[in-house]
Amino acid sequence: MNRHTAREKAFQVLFQLDINDNNPDKAVEEHLETIEIDAFLMSLVKGVTEKKAGLDDIISYHLENWTIDRIASVEKTILRIAILEINYIDDIPTNVSINEAVELANMYGDEKSGKFVNGVLSKIIA
Image 1: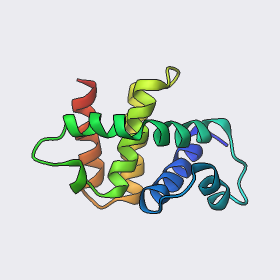
Image 2: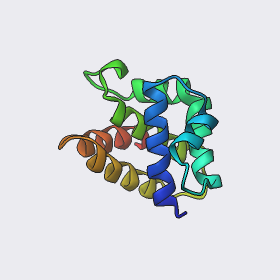
Image 3: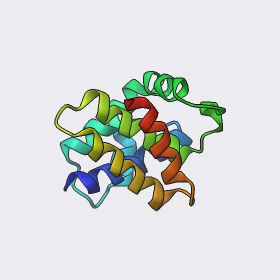
Image 4: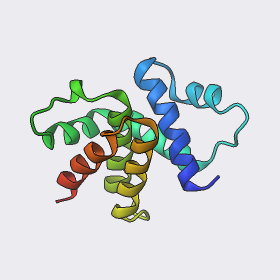
């Protein structure tokens, strides 16, 4: 599985975990019954799950006129993945993490999601 696909699958699992409080390993197994589970996908799911409070603190600190509770689960999940990659995974260039996040936001969010995610991530890396 390539990193783009793994990132998308991780987003889907993490989005479900954000809505339903479930065990991350069980959620991955249930969601990906027919797809090979790879190390990058699991590192994203486990990393976001384990560091969720810290990732949310980073998001909250960089919001203007918003609170993290007002952010839709789609955008929040995407931001968590991107911030995890930027702060904790050394072999992924920051611009790749941002581009992938914006692409996911455009695919799964509404027409403003990509711009919102890009804006928050731009403040975080500034």
